[in-house]
Amino acid sequence: MKQIYTESILLIERLHRRFLDVVKAELDRLKIDDINNVQTLILYNISGEQLTIGELTERGYYLGSNVSYNVKKLVENGYLVQERAPHDKRSIRIKLSDKASELCKKIDALYQRNVDVLSKETTPIELSALNKNLSHLETFWTNYINNIHRIK
Image 1 (cartoon, rainbow, N blue to C red):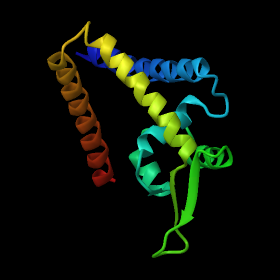
Image 2 (image 1 turned 180 degrees about the vertical axis):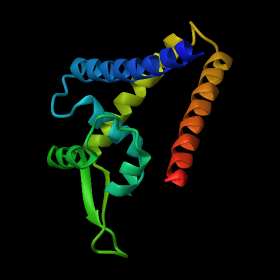
Image 3 (image 1 turned 30 degrees about the vertical axis):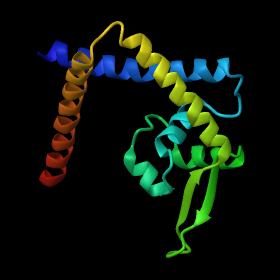
């Protein structure tokens, strides 16, 4: 079981890196060079929402990235718009610019092309089973972390 567990962890890590490579290849194909793959996924995950940097960080999907640095770069390159929250002037909310929305449409088209090809190789049931297992592992790790914090 330990060998299989370790293999799963390594595979998850490799899959994440490989998907970042897929996004990078798409950016290269589109000749977009003012944003990187991690920043692109940050934009895609923000979508139509308005968030604080703290809320974005809490989502925690940005392995090996500094969210504050990436948000700064995204603002500098015109992908994010910063606004002061109306109810708390100390809080800054971020949202996609029109430029970012256009990029997200292109990344969504990439996702759809991937789905179209993948659907010829696997079934929705198989992919759902994979998602269920990955969610179970996420819950297991979350519970482990929460239990460790209670022990301290």
